[in-house]
Image (cartoon, rainbow, N blue to C red):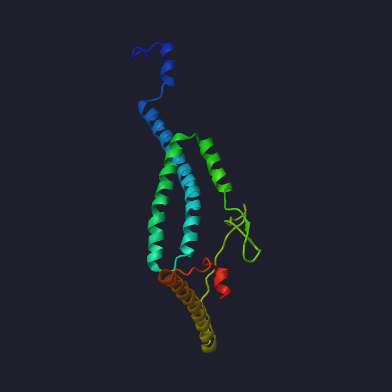
Length: 196
């Protein structure tokens, strides 16, 4: 201490002061941790907002009968997903983390309600969520069919394809009849098609 002209009282200050590089590194790590927490929160909020958009999008896609119809629906809903992502980013920048978490919880609880089906009287469930603590597994199996079983599988898939093609033909003929004569039919639905 004598060599550097440091008095005994000055030594305590030297030991307490952190080097500039250490302070800068701590600040960088703190900022990185805050950014990562914000990005995680933004991702969760975006997923929650996008889920509701996807549900409506999927419902419309179920009603599409042609590839052009599917493309039109996709073109209409893809910007909505981008808008939901931008909205999530904006909300995360404006809200405190507690407010953002509350918004995520509100959006998650606003799942589609369960309502009675008008045709069958059964209950139609909204979005399925895996209960806390449960796991989801999927299995894939290769089929080693005998020739008779393979023919049965082909018949089953052929019947499904025939039923879909019949439904598309029926809906198209209804649309053509409406355009030609103005004759209206019932609103297309699964139960309406089954009754024909």
